[in-house]
Length: 307
Image 1: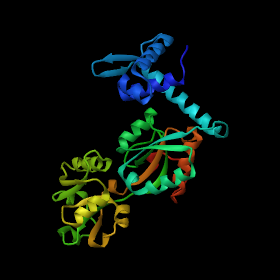
Image 2: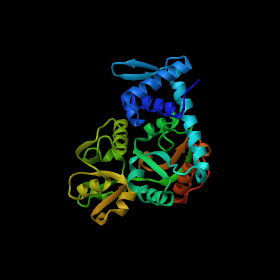
Image 3: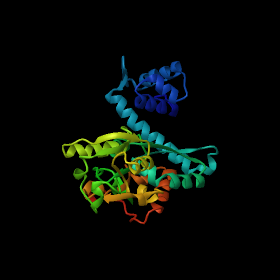
Image 4: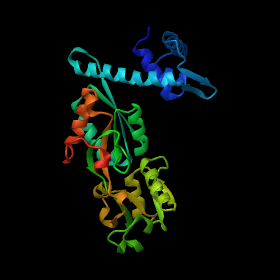
């Protein structure tokens, strides 16, 4: 068999992008070169790896198997490079980190900035997704580390506690609900809300909770951040649900009423997850240590069923 790491990386990019053109672009190759390399892979392995269709490509069973092995091989190569950084001048490790809205907005910006300042040879590819999508990506090997809510089942992965992330209902001081000290989400659903963007992980999560109650959230307007939600609630646009951490850092929080939600799903913990923390490249393990160093939670790996 004659193929190289460029071929493997190209094949992964093609399968994840869903077409050869996009995969070639991600691999910094011309379309002609990428197509020739894919044909060469299929010839070297004597098997069809991709099914071509009008809407793009789909990996065959053999293609899926190759993708899985390619991820492992490339991860091992990156780990080798990281462990031999002193001898591999110019190497730059990249960590693919997926997280939910709360982690992205409230807990990661300063922490990741500190880590990057301390590790100039490491880059972080950071994306926001709902927890279920993060689990799928980590299981499939398309993400190195995820930060998820403990509301989802991650029992087949390695997890570590990251931080508490309780959700709070925010109302104006003169709102009828302001007389409560806490309440259930269902008690607020008859009122109108200020929400986040429809594709944000938090918006999807809250809509799912409303659907479980047989209701829908009445969203009047959407903001781009928790700060935007709080500012609009302050001006009377509707109610909002945000992490308690967002309320604590909001400059005008004293002009709002923060009501803890008594629903079990609102008393959240955020977890770090990976297929195997010990199998991560050293530079990725250093990020896990840094993130864990910012919390006072136990350091013992656990499954989500232990929460």
